Amino acid sequence: MTRPLPTFRLLLAAAVMALAALPGRAADDGAAEHEVGPDGEADDVARSPGAGPSSQQAFMAERGLVRYRGAWRTSQEIELIERSERETVAQKQWGPRLEKLRRRLDDPATSATAAEELREIVDPAAVSALGAAVAREGVPQVRAFLLEALARIGSPDAIAIILQVAIDHADPDTRLTAVERLQAIGPMIAEPACVAALGGPDNARVNRAAEVIGALGLSGAAAALVEALETEHVVIASDGRQEGQTSVAFGSGGDGLSLGGGPKRGKVRLRNEAALAALVRITGQDFQWNLPAWRQWLARQELAEAIDLRRGD
Image (cartoon, rainbow, N blue to C red; front, side):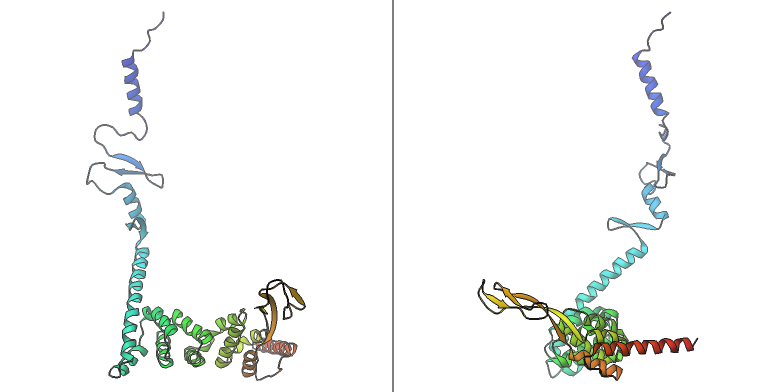
């Protein structure tokens, strides 16, 4: 006997019952839903308004995170962000303050007190404004006041500005003032920057860095000075001829004739007097431009130091 097919109503009822039985499906009795958290565990969160934080908020709160400016952050991150913003505001305020002090320096009635205030700045937030002021200041004495303030602050970024002035400022007296400040802070702090400058492409800067090394007595830079006694540099020269004419390229890298006009690129090897003077000053030796002799002397010094260290064991 053939059974009758289920009616449409029976099929619909069966589908509804099957859907209600699915895992995670809440009953229609007002019970709380179950949401799966990021760690795979179920979080019970009521759907009714005002019943409590969302599952994501609860999950983040358990891990010490709070919503801040569109992102989940730790309290430490928030403190760093707000501290950085406060520092930025303070730095911007120092620009106008220094300009006001500078105007007072030009007034005989207020110049003495303004100079004292300038020299006694100790706020690290002033470093950027002080550096900019040194760069644009045209009066050597005022530059000296600014450098004194930077040295008084003594933070890494303040010392970096003093180092840059010592090596790169156009005025020799200002460079010397910066060197004196470095000497007072601690000369060894200048050695890495000076050694790096000795290996740069700018021959004038090589010599200025050597002058700083000699003035500070940085004996640890002796080997770098030996290698800087003679340095090779790329030069671009033009004899002013029209394009297509013959010209001569000078230097060890450009011997012979070059055809064609326009700038010519070549290499020249230069002797650096400041490097030699610094070597003589910090070593007490004078082998002139004899690089092998300098290298041999350095090797003997290193050997003697190694023997002394072994004897001390």
